[in-house]
Length: 332
Image 1 (cartoon, rainbow, N blue to C red):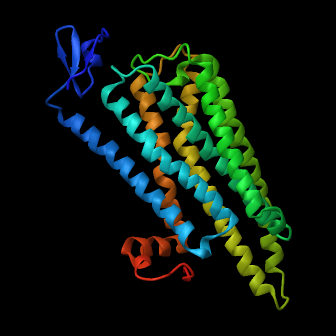
Image 2 (cartoon, rainbow, N blue to C red; image 1 turned 90 degrees about the horizontal axis):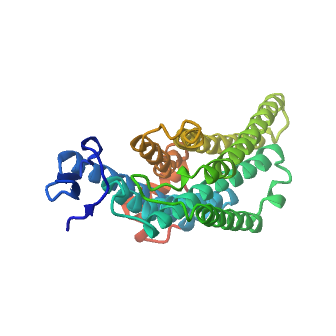
């Protein structure tokens, strides 16, 4: 059924899924090729994100070898990414395809709240992972006593609670001013703009970068010490140290991918008010989708860098886990 828009858009503002009928624009009954491709592309992005993160979640929950504090944090991150694919992508796809010309009020608020909350959850989980890696590499002797299952559960609860409060809080601040005029973003409100970016992105990113810098500095010193070690048990020490370093590097890559995906959007969100909102909405929307694509890329990083995740993925995709009890299987 066609939805009419009363907004006074110019010809150049016509969305590929709309057509002009006099002074109004209606959702076209004969979508253009660009409109169909847009549906297919965004739908495929959502499907890949859901499937990839389900693989990570099932792997960690099913295989006992993956039951480690670090992987529990990875599991929490995968759940947040899965919800992005299940909730944020479909709502945002509706907006992207229709330009939010007939969605107002509650639609924008729900979409904005999930968007902010899940993005904040992702970055807080990454912060927790960086703390886990700090103790694993910099304080290996006290790692198991300081980072245990109870501590990890507390980290996860704090991350999700703080994220939910931040999402509802920012939405509440901009509740009266939130409109749906070609943009369905809470971020166009100047007051919540800078505050949200600083609290949800810049501060956590600075903290993570400082932690990883410290980790790699300590790792370099440990590497030089191990090379000079000739004691009988040095081989096991070297092997354990290499495994921790590999895990740290892989999770640092996860953080790097996160920065690559989300930094352009947050920079535009920060400077857009200063430039009197010169950045066009289509570009802003593109940067947002680049940020959300991070939820799709994380499972690919795990599969590429972790051999045990690759083994788990193959067993799940091939259906081997349904042919017998493989929870104790050795993942290579």
